[in-house]
Amino acid sequence: MSDVAPRFRSHVEDILEGLRDEPCREALVHGGRRITAGEFHDLVHRMAWALQAQGIERGQTVTLLSGNLPEAIALRYAANLIGAQVNHLYGKLSADVQAAIVRDVETRALVVDPRMSGRAEEIVEAVDVKSVLTLGPAGTAQDAPGDQDLLALAALQSPEPFPSQAEPDAVCAIRHTGGTTGHPKGICTTYRQVQELRTARPDDDGSTPPRQLIVTTIAHAAAMLADGVLETGGTVVLLDDFEPGEVLDTIERERISHMWLLPPLLYQLLDHAHMERTDTSSLRQVVYGGCQASPTRIAEAVRRLGPVLMQGYGQNEAGIISILSPADHDPDRPERLRTAGRIVPGVDVEIRDEDGNALPNGEHGEICVRSAMAMEGYWKQPELTAEVLKDGWLHTGDIGFRDDDGYLTVVDRIKDMIVVVGGHVYTTELEDLLNSHPDVRQSAVFGVRDEDRMEQVHAAVLLAPGATTGADELRAMVRAARGAMYEPARITFPSELPLTDVDKPDKKELRRRATAPTD
Image (cartoon, rainbow, N blue to C red):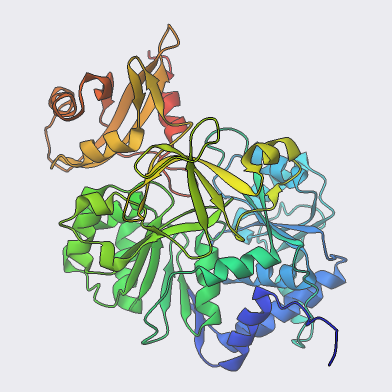
């Protein structure tokens, strides 16, 4: 019997094996392009050889500035085959923030979507990057010096399988927070942790290969879902951005079975004029998460789409924490829809008070998590890492409680909780109440400090078309239901809510607008 330990096998190798086994199946759809599994499999290996020929080695950082291109997914796999770590920039961050991230993660190569060549020029003017590569011809006269077309370089390489250089405890991805509470933090994920994340993916009935629609940036959670679909014989349909009419047309035309949305985007679908005449019968799993959802709107979604909704609660730092299954999505039980579901196997959760003591069921405290999916730490921020990771437990910064049936409820971010005279206002509870009004489509609640540095409750409310409900009526409803402490000092009615790059309500921007001087 040999004492030699088996070689570590990365998630990329499993994905490539799934592609190799069915080379003729449709793997990716983008615009008018339909790419087979065999074509995509070969592209990944050609890219890996091309990256190596450019001098990119294991342990170095490849930063990706790209929209939802198939080639961007291939680049991520190719870099991971080499054992390099991938940092995918959120496209809507400012140039100076993107440049700071490129510098922070010690970028060896910047790989650019040709549509973003102008932004890439701004970045390389601020940061010295050894290699700048493009995913196709840049198509401008102002290409940055040294730009090379990675696809052209890859076409010169052999599709011979590139032997994986991945090591289990090496970093494979550096994902950044959205920067809504300050400078984005780099979250380090290892190859071993990705394998753990794969085991916690939502189940599917497997009746037919999934057809996953990606409408949010692949720099965020959508990438993990795409990985699972490509590995298990399905098809990934990529849209460049979220536009509700286009999404509904694509669901019907492409017979989409799976979709991931943040709640604000799901609400936009429900409110679109084409929803009622769109055939959504192909949908069998609509996963939502990333920010708090309104029980009222989720119940509406269940009634319109059927028993296909599933909520996933987690964090980039913590991985998947809990899931609210389709069976738990009973539109007549809004109290269940308010929860984040049951904790997934292999994850330990404690609700702790400010002194770190575990609290019993029903009591509010910080949600602390222990699991193999938790991050290794923040990139080059040991002090911040030590604040979040303590004695093997990750402190999520979320306030919540667990009930006697084992369901976890998230009530707020610690940083979003509003401290007022008389107690605490949990923003999500007030949002749920406002959203229960028949004229309200969505709301965002946030705190604003007044001249005396006391926090005041503010709410931005989206009304249904033609609705005439005013601030006084909503205040009266809140006062009657929750008391004067929860009553907003100010309610505004914008035409739309600002969203972050990962499509969460941007409360930092709302707070800025509320405090901006008026003419």
